[in-house]
Length: 319
Ligand code: ADP
Ligand code: F6P
Image 1: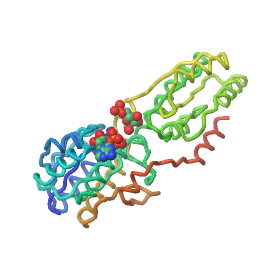
Image 2: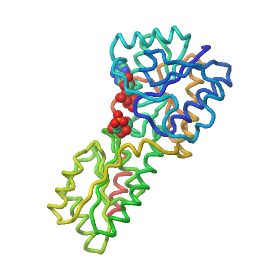
Image 3: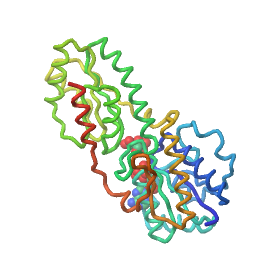
Image 4: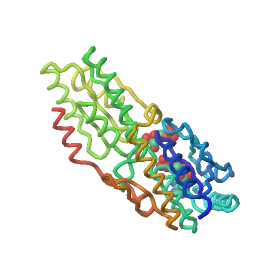
């Protein structure tokens, strides 16, 4: 292993820059050369590849987004696209590749590995939807953004005595809604992993109103969808005025939290070590406070885990 490549792919996530910095600096420290690949698999196919040095990753640890940029590249899903990628890796003398992204990006990394090219995945997505790792880079920052939004909306919710429905990201995973809802003291949390019962939500709203509660925050995961229909249904059943806020891409940016920077740095370092040990086809993650690695086949398995204890706690605390 003389030269490694690094790319970020799929939806960007705050903390990806800290991961890039760790990969580059640890690799250089250990005597490797590093190639940066811009715009994920799109840049790989096009040969948008450049040499990185210590300064390439200076002054980025605190920045959201990714200096390597990201992309969703349909061509890479085809056999022809994959072969183009492999050819570029050969042309640029890259011996191993670190891919920072979500499950789609991991599927691409797995295909490269199945074609004999060593790859290591770093979990970079705000969704926290990879079942093998407790946390993905960007999730902590995203939930803090949502908690801050809940604070603002709670003020206006109280002033008007409304029910405010907040739709948050997460694809098919309810983790952003669950964690931010618990931290923000939401009255109801609606996630794809638990069957939605509008009567439960309405009962809570009415009970809260009867005991003088002014604000009502309902956190809705995008995987459930239809926030305006939910709002209309609540108004119909309770007579309460409702408003919908879709936070959207605000959750994808911003200054990464210390937690995200720390796990990103630890993941980046471990990814380089694995490649140097001659290991490929694996993804790094965190279990408790331990850095782990699992086969990419395992890391790309659909995730149906739900932290039931946390969900039940949020329910108890919002009676
Ligand atoms: P994320 O990595 O955040 O889940 P995507 O699902 O959009 O985001 O995947 C990012 C990129 O990974 C895709 O645009 C594509 O280039 C690549 N990718 C996704 N699925 C596959 C697949 N089955 N085979 C090869 N590449 C894939
Ligand atoms: O995977 C991250 C994510 O932000 C999801 O939560 C969301 O569904 C999706 O990406 C949005 O994708 P795009 O940025 O392409 O609109």
